[in-house]
Image 1 (cartoon, rainbow, N blue to C red):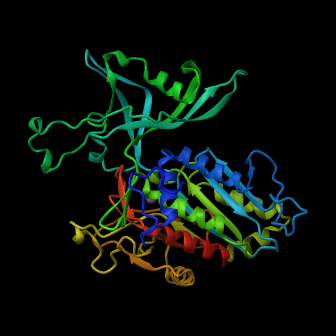
Image 2: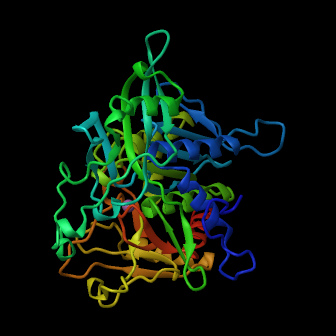
Length: 449
Ligand code: CO
């Protein structure tokens, strides 16, 4: 199954072959939106014996058990919020010391389908009204097959509503560029207007009223039963492995599904330790994390508090546990760009396939400090994983991520890390084919420590 869907398979006899990279590319290919990320993680958790908890129900939690007489399912749980964020955790056999957490994000920049999306170009086309979700590179969305995926909220028989995952899963839309003859200055830089330039063609004039028919069809529901939708465009170009020695991967959504998948592998494969192993994937990082399911929400704090309380521990024990906890905030980092080396810091410039990147920022956009960096380096050494460092140029502000936002709810020692990549926030990004195994390996060591 490894890498089956990648265009160029990594050769099994190649020294660069790593099984996890192929499986990760399959996962990304099958996860066009944050809702699919959570659904696919959920599927895997259920197959590994994890028990689903609902926030709206009372929790009864047990630690992992020894021996076969007790339930094999004890101690392994997960909970979702909004079907777009998910926290999975394992409770150790003995009373625990702290929470060992890795956080990443499920969302990627895209275009969201607006209400009443069909727009007619009289006698010629039906196009779709969309708006930006997050800060993407716009030009890269042109001239490639696009499709639509997300979730629908459906009217049920009893006049209640339920959620349905949907992926049209065929080449459906195109955003054709304006010919060079009609804009001779196109190569001198163009400012894209989201309301004018970024509306993809859905069909010819006869396509009127067909968009929600197509979507309903793909979801197996009736068009008139669709009461709500969170639908996004996605790039149909398949992931690929490329380069002189297959050293690179190309794919949509490497930021941040590369971190989601590899840290999850580390989480699932880790042996039991003295800490609660917690794997968090939050939605809405690309729009500031300030939603009910984002990193700034109470989702993590609520979950940790409930774990503590359900095991009969006191509030005092919760605070001592948090004080002994550690978080890895995992989100991809910029590799030095081949044609723009001047955009990187003169010294701390990550290279793809050279290991996990530790991210530093004096103004604490990244949470890394001397203590958390040192602890993380020790874990890398233990895992036999190379690491490197990233800082922005001192005259460039750079981006932000989850760590410093999440700590406003649960304040723990945190390190910001990621894997090196190019073309961040393009609908087709580049990363190293060796790096996924490194983040998986250090994640496993972290959860075991
Ligand atoms: Co990111």
